[in-house]
Length: 208
Length: 197
Image 1 (tube, each protein chain N blue to C red):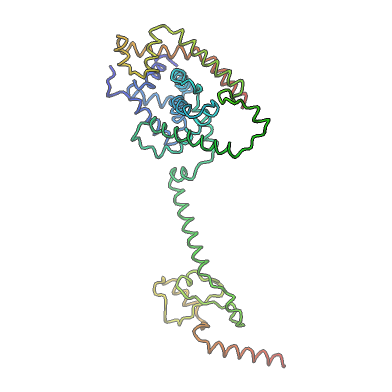
Image 2 (cartoon, rainbow over the protein chains, first blue to last red):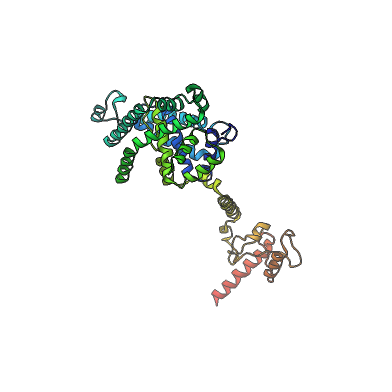
């Protein structure tokens, strides 16, 4: 029986990965980045609309995070810390972008080729857009195809952020069942995504 | 890779795995590609479910960030924090530049003596620093009697060196101008006599 005391909380897990990254463990840092990639992208998306720019700024945020890691003392949670860096980086990006635009004389043809609405501009390569679209579609299908109990458990965990204990109370089942349901949901979606991800990784290797 | 490992991974990312198992799994994950792949895929599912409408789906950003960090040259700050050797080398470099600056500032302008034949290249140390680092070591002399030292703060070895270097005592121009005048007159007379002969 796992008690609250002997579990490694998410905050402790972050602290453990941060410590390893501070010592130069790049794999630990990679795990950290993937842990917070989407939340950081969501923050950036509140400032920047272009999806390509969001990806670039997200990379910049995590590079700044890596450089500033020695200064992270753990007074606040890791996410609170990177949230501030993400907000500042997004604002700085907007300021430097507006300076670039003011300093650039757009040729008439270039100006005409840009749509007036920034939403309609998409600088992704067609392959990347297709791959991303396919991933999202496949994921949505796989989630839809999950049995009701697994789908409820994973949504309560990932979307509502409930603890296993709270989910067990909501679903009126033992906590062990919640563990199993959440894992089975993740595993089913992982199996559905793997062929696509393997193709994607092969495509990236060929491009390099 | 067993289902048990994957279930442990699922619990680890939710903060629901025991500390010991978590530490073991984190360590293992860094050398096991399959385990780290599961970590990335489970987090991508999380990304898909947490994604805001305006944001793109983020997939394995960590690998891209790490690749970019490894391509960039390390910053000075990182080098300074990564080990004591950089700090000591930087400290040495600063000390050396300060010493060089001091030597350059203390080097006198030799052109001032250009009007005095024979004494043109004769320079005299005026301070203890100049004795230690004479402006032009080949011609520098200390114009002091052998039995007397104006620089008691110098080490015995340097004092001994100075004593040995002063077997032929020289008189500084600024101490005995009459002597210099006599020497100049004598030199001119001698050179005139040589010319007449």
